[in-house]
Every structure is written in C-alpha cells, then in structure tokens.
Image (cartoon, rainbow, N blue to C red; front, side, top):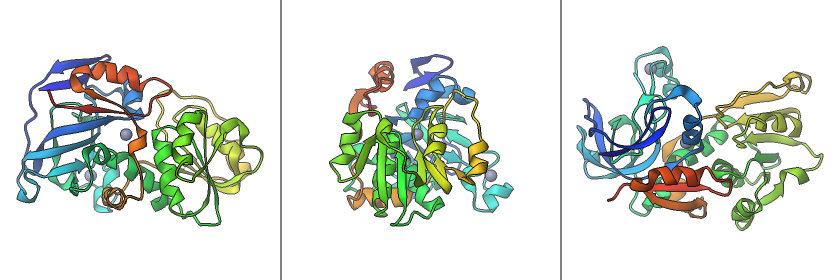
Length: 317
Ligand SMILES: [Zn+2]
Ligand SMILES: [Zn+2]
C-alpha cells in the first residue's frame, strides 16, 4: 500500500498492508488531515519513525466485533494496555505503555490502511461527511479545554493563535457564551470565525486588559510567554501547543501572579461527533487544500506555508 513514511525524511513509499491482531480493526483510510503535530514530527519532535498521520476517517474492512464491519469510523489515537495503574484509574490516554497512532510506536493514517484497537473506534453518522469527520480528533482536543477548566459566561477568555486548533477552540468556547477573543496574526484566518460572530483581534492590538483564562494554541515557542503576559493574577493558562523547539522561559510571573497552568491534549470523541452532527461547529472553512496521497509530499509543503490551514489527504488512486 502507499504510505507517507518518515525516517528523518518524509517519503512516499510502498509499505506492506498492516496485519490486525486480536481485538483490532483493519481500516481502509478514506481521508486524513495534516496536523501541526505532524509538521513538528517532521522537524524532530518525539523522534518518531514510521507512517505519519493521526487524524482520519475510514471504513472498517475486518474486525472481531461485527458492529463495526463496513462502517465509517474515526479512531482515538492512544492505543493502551488497559492494565497499568493509569489505565485502571480511567486515565487511559496517559497509559504508561501507550502507543500513539502516527506519533509513538504505531503506524499512522497517511496510508491506504491502518490498524487500531476496536475500543478506539467511533462510528460516524451518515449526516457527517468525510471532510468534517476528519476533524473529530482535533475538535475533541478543543472540547478537552472545557472538560478541564470551568469557563463561565462572565469570564474574559483569550484564545491565542489563529491556526487550525485556535479556530476550533474558539468555536468550542463560543458555545459557553464567555467574553471571548481569538487573537492571531493573520487577518484572513481571523475572518473565518469573525463571520461566525466571534470577536477577533490582532495580537499586537490586544492592549493591556488581562484575561481570566488564556488558551495557548499559538504553536510557537513564544506562545506560553505571551499567554503569561495576558493572564490576570490567579487566572488560568491552558497550554495546547506541542512544539519541537524548546526555549528558556522565566516562570517567575506564574509564581508572583499565582497563575494556574494546565496542559491539555486529547479529548472525548463522542462530544466532537455530536457537535458536528448538530452543526454547532463549522469546520469546512478550515480546509485549505485536498491532495491525493500520490502528491503527499507536496501536501506537506503546502501545509507548511504560513497562510495554510487544514490540508486533507485522500487515499483514492
Ligand atoms: Zn493532531
Ligand atoms: Zn495502560
């Protein structure tokens, strides 16, 4: 099968079709999305070798549990042991022995086929097309913010970063009716949520007024520093970006201002699927290109451009 394989360099290769183990499903990938994490892996984040990709929608071609057979599904990315102390406590996404689709010791979705445990799968309602279903994973990561922090309607909230994740998180938080601003550096990207009634601002124009909660979706090493400067004393910062590059940062303001810092990663898939089915979130304006896997290398070059948002890959010939 064709696959986008990363081994210090990204290549389009012919790879063997994966074999499913017990309790796993073989999935024919229909569509996959390129995420910033993929771009960071290509820059050296996590030292991953293998087939990239963790955002996908596909059709189950073989499985043990017949309710999935022939169904269109999306899949949670953490493959867990189910036995370690974290799994037993219900913290499966933090399993000590986890493999992560396209990120850690498990081949990913930029290929014609992938395997995942059946426990990870969620069936997609007919009403939700592939181009939307492929956003379930990042949208679930957006909803994770509201699982972790109680955002009140009276809160002033700044989402920092107008990339794909920032645009999704802003739409999620708008559902809480908080006093929300999406801040970024790209007027064309900001205009996507502005047309949905969400306040937007260029980062340079944010002014002095501090926020109760700041969500860092900037995806840059500078994001956290900026977030610290934007948060009121005793406020909360939610960190969503994973960045390959490290940088020195003075954490004293966190102490002096008694700021709570929360790391935030994967979220609840059924909530994201329901939001798409109900039309609460509009992901379609976030698609800035669709490529066949045959042009996968070009797709990555396109995704790296400043003005790009979500680049999708299709697996058909
Ligand atoms: Zn991602
Ligand atoms: Zn475990």
